[in-house]
Length: 208
Image (cartoon, rainbow, N blue to C red; front, top):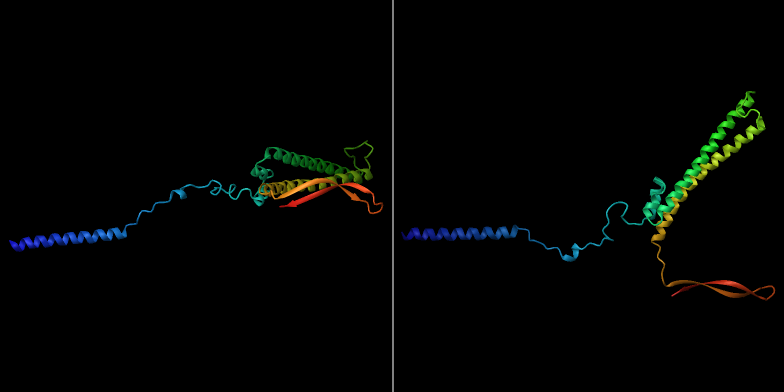
């Protein structure tokens, strides 16, 4: 009887010891909970930006690239007076495109008429004062030159609107320091020949 009680006591002690060891191992394997400081939860909207367009805004290279892909998109990207600039851009492109079509059409007409005149055939300008080889050739060359100039104008408009987007994006980040001041003031200069005083305007740039 006594040995049985001792056995039960020993068994109980063994169970408690095993549970204690297992509990300690579980605690060592558990990942401690980490609390994120409240200051890290607050995010500055000016620092955290999403999307390709809003990232590092305004980006001059990105504005120029957008305008090269689609005219006027760089101006929309820069915001500001884009609603004024975009109609002007497309108005200029439309005007140059019309000039290309007009000059190209007339070039083809006078080229065809000139070839017909060389072959002693009637042209669509029959009876008109310029219905002769010399005049038709001059008119053909005139509209051919204007067609080439119109294409140059189209490229120039396309490039200028991209440059405008690039420059405008640069100006958005241009920092004017208050320590730099520009003043315009009247002054008198002396004429080197006559020695007489002459009025002038002076520009004074002051660095503080």
